[in-house]
Length: 176
Image (tube, rainbow, N blue to C red; front, side, top):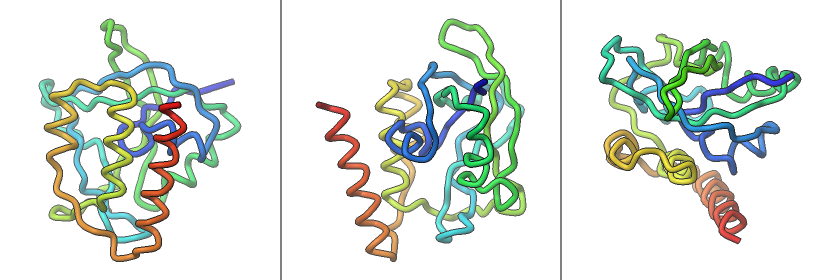
């Protein structure tokens, strides 16, 4: 058995999600009434991570990637996503490019972990952008919701170097 997972942040990138849990790309999709915001306080490094913030404005849309993930991996994904430690799980109804709707599982920021004025680390935003590019999300959305986001440098130079190296290694293998 598998479940549909709607990824909208760094997990959009198969190179990031695929080393965490087995996953299979299904499609891209959008979630209306929400905005992508980089305002979720990371409990690990103090930077900001992505959140799909509910606005109830139909014109607001978050694009993301739907993956099939084995049910047996749900606990592992919950742990990696910080379920109960900054994120809550949520069932959503996403819209596919052909207009069909699909139920999926995702994660949203626990309101107690939302902090305005935070910036993501440059390597984190690079993973988000890599996933958006990999799956061909609409260019206008990518520019407005991801590319335009201001980043900060990770003060942990070792972590920064490891993340950039992992992203570059994935990009090299992907383009072969």
